[in-house]
Image (cartoon, rainbow, N blue to C red; front, top):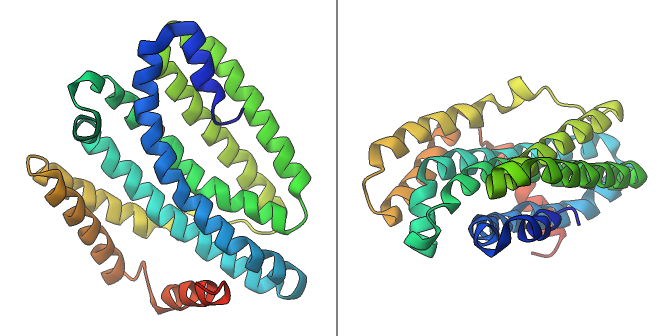
Length: 251
């Protein structure tokens, strides 16, 4: 219900054409959502184990996981927003050019999904899964209500906005809950390096926008991670933690 009700409601209210444009963008979001889902699955056993034995290690693991996911999700949102039309045309051709604006909105919902996943896994690992369930249920209700309000007037764009607002609300509630449980973060001071690197990457994308996508995308990725590396947004501690987590999972 939480993830698919918008598509169902859009189909009933606006027909197949609007649903097709929306789904074209949504499928791209679906593919990228496997990243935080997979990372969460890898982290969850370690998070649960640390809660029982080393709570300070759990705090560090959550902090680093949150940072990694934001580090991936934020530049993905920035970059996709800037080249969304080219991505849609490359993937679906001209018939789906109306999907561009939906992708530009939904990609920011995905940015929140990246960090919402790990906050949800944290609540589950510290035995507050009931709160996570209530939050998900409330956000599902909020999403359905927004769809009833926005889809009749704004069609598939309204559905995309409803998804973005729902994920933002989910972020606010989950962040409040983890902060109350003692796992809060200072977002501004902790995340400024990925934000700065993403802004610089955006400038590069604007400069390279006329080139082939197979040049633009790899160049943007290499540039972003280079800026992070030289600004110490990625350090030896982060790399060692990643190796430890994957080694503990036999990967």
